Length: 281
Length: 259
Ligand SMILES: Nc1ncnc2c1ncn2[C@@H]1O[C@H](COP(=O)(O)OP(=O)(O)OP(=O)(O)O)[C@@H](O)[C@H]1O
Ligand SMILES: [Mg+2]
Image 1 (tube, each protein chain N blue to C red):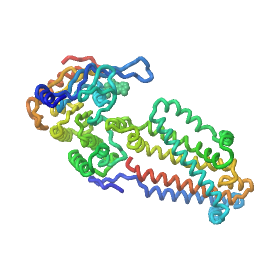
Image 2: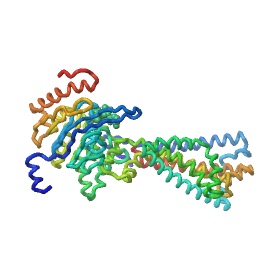
Image 3: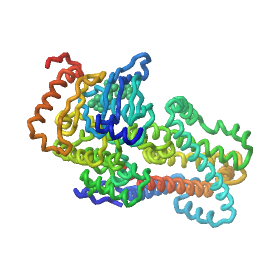
Image 4: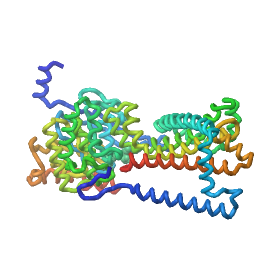
């Protein structure tokens, strides 16, 4: 692709960073041959270069499954996932950072060394590495705990270690699977602001999976709303926030309207996911 | 070593208390030993003091050292083989679900067979001498190390491995950077067990088909009913095994006190 053409695309339409085309994921049930669980799909979705995309949906609808497909950690049963124009086939592309739903801190490493883990493999000198770690520690409010070990930290602090470990490598695509799940509401808001800051600074594309409708409405440019399992996108809500926003937009009228709309879309699906007949909205 | 934290809490396993407990246990054992010596009679069971004095004399006698050296050599090689083969097998089977499921029961079965039944086969294969001893020591030690390593590797939390995969780690980096440290505490347990069993295996090997080594000395002493030598050797071996096991435990705590 020539430079001229690239510029043209950038001005005419936002560049697609990740695309999912008619993606389905089914799981075989170990010990029960023939039985499959249809976890996800079909899903069609394009993530634009540099956008902040949130996904909300009832528990068990396939959000984590979706994230693992995009990360290249698992392969789609049908359809295709592409990152930066190239299809992912169980191969893990460079430039993707993931924060998992579970605690993934390494218990044998100090907080500092946990954060340094991914960096050590990159060709950056020691001074730059320490600088980045320092910034990340500060950003996540962990500076006083650099020498502590995960067993000495609370669940929320461990999750922040994992966020820091992912962010210091400056990925082009950041996948966050309920990263603030273990945090209190106030800390969630502050962490959200930090992630927004970083997103603005690095220009990375962010895919955030969250349980919290508020969080989605607060942080994202667009919000994908998923149905009960097998998860499909039932709607995509545009928030229309400016790029330099922060958690104070929670006071705006539009914010209430967005969360109300999300809840209207999700109420029926959530009842379905709980095994209750409902769907009246 | 300890980490003073902002909220003032320090989490650390009490190493100190472990030492006093050990000392207490040793004193208790010596007391029981002394008591038994009084009841049974010194001719059949020499007292701790007599044994320690005799051990001192044994250690200064020149005829003892070649035997010790022989055993040390055989044990050293057997231990090295046990550890290397055990770890390699454990990692291979732990990382390969199918092979692991297939071979784990086989390992457990072989582990529960009295190894002495395998001895004639080993003698045929290796002949008399150091090779047979090493082989006998190795088959005792290698399986527990392999089994513990296998379980440890298999039980590594999947999310840690996913983290490594997303970072693009090669297989080698995955093993050294994630699998090994994650599995280390459990592997240490296997190593401690494997260490003792390799020692026992090597000595057994010497007892039945060798003209040299501590095992041979022991067998000889049993034949001659030389209680002093039997007690001194047993004392030395227990002391050695106990110290080594304690040292491994210390290493484990020292490096993995936070896990
Ligand atoms: N490895 C697997 N094998 C079999 N089934 C699986 C596997 N992983 C996920 N599933 C199934 O796929 C469905 C979606 O799971 P997933 O973890 O993606 O849900 P989720 O939307 O992330 O839920 P939550 O919000 O609770 O985290 C679930 O019904 C789950 O049982
Ligand atoms: Mg999930």
